[in-house]
Length: 132
Image 1: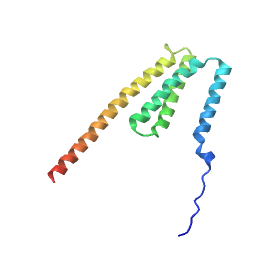
Image 2: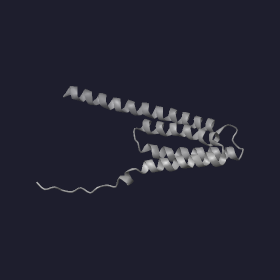
Image 3: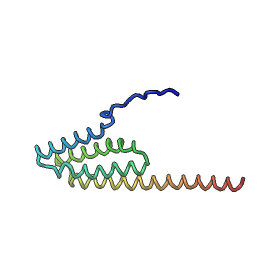
Image 4: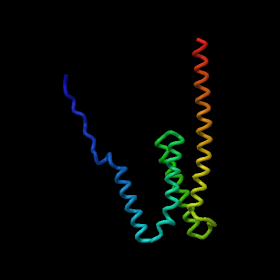
């Protein structure tokens, strides 16, 4: 039996989510320190984080979080831009809460329908196994 040396992966490249989190935290601190408007900017983002989790959980895929991040970031940006232009009659956090509520309703119905299909397939398999 021979010993085979496996290539060592760089631990630094495995830690990219940590580096991204630190960079994001530095950006948050910079915005708070420079603009002094943290609640106006970050309240919709907190709701967006709930939407990201909701989408990834409902679809059962961690990769769905990236799609949710992209889509919901665009929605937050549009809401904040409209608010900055004075064209939004409500707070962006309220608007984002409405978007996440609609997303929850859609994903809940999607999950219920998907669960019903899976249950029907299982029942059909069980019936076939009883027949044979």
